[in-house]
Image (cartoon, rainbow, N blue to C red; front, side, top):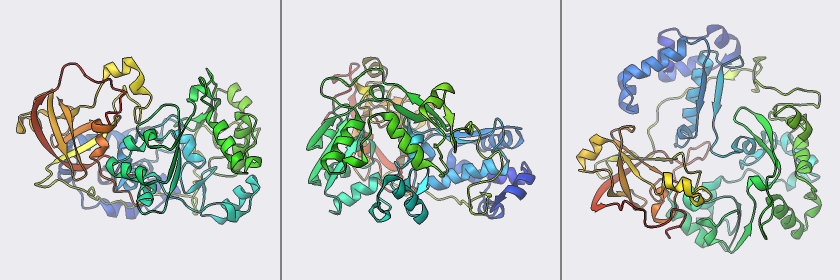
Length: 482
């Protein structure tokens, strides 16, 4: 699409010249691609690719929005940079009805990423390897800079480190890697190798069954706090109910753990607002600056957009209106991106592409939604979506039980013949565990920069079993099937 924009001069030359760098290198990286090549690799008709580029290039305004799918590849960062290149080439940034954004998979995925959920990050989008950033946060927390850890391991890298014997103990909160991480037999082996594992969760997940200690935590409906939307608006969530019986608020659990580790003086918060006020200070001066955001201000304004650097600042509903980008040269950067194949491609032994993802009635690893009857009724078990042409090659009909085999494992799923999928690809949703887990099959290879696994592509075999699925699901969907 970038090449089509260039070939047809659907470009914002003034924006490119004055506010960006690296445009020529980005063009050079796609110079040899053509529509026939694009059709072959994407499975999308070349006429549709051209029309998409035309609609984008000639529009007066446009917004590029995507979810997690393009990131779940060993070239996920390149995929995202390719999208940003399209936005910059047409100057669709920093002005009304234009922009670029990503939809996170979790309710507060945006807010978490801004303040340290990533292992290379400190509050305010600060870099944990930057000496100035480290010193500022150390001063806020009243510790020496040397006490701050260095860059850590991402989730899947932690599983690999457990296998190497480098991690002996683990505490997790609201994390179900036995369902949500790829190659989950490898994940299971890691959990079994841990000398100690403590799980904090609101429900007994598949992963929690491997824990030495389980702490009953809280749902977001049971604890006050803030979340940040995909548009960068900080909003307040009020507790609707209290945790039942002996369950406790997650914040209370973490503070008591700190106290028992003789660090209670650093975790002596009497309310969620007090925690947020420390976050305001910790984020001050960062690119995701929350300092000027207070609970009162959030409530009175139906949310406040970051950055908001001072109490009298109204917030920033639209980034980059001043065309001053947070880069060393102050410009938005194009990136030269060339096509890379997935880490595992189809061959004669494994001739079909397997992709995984979500269905609308289930959420993440299904720990909560597989307990809700109406949602279970909508989609009680994972199905194997397959195109009619591919189904005919294997003599598959809807309802047939198909064994799907990859180099990591095999599992059986009822087929669902649909036309809304590529002819060389099958799809399985990942929200179930045990024998129904799609992630028994997926590959654990990571993007070299983001370290996100390649959930979306691996090679598989399809083996009809000769059996047909029962019209009535025999087991309730929330069972673990272990």
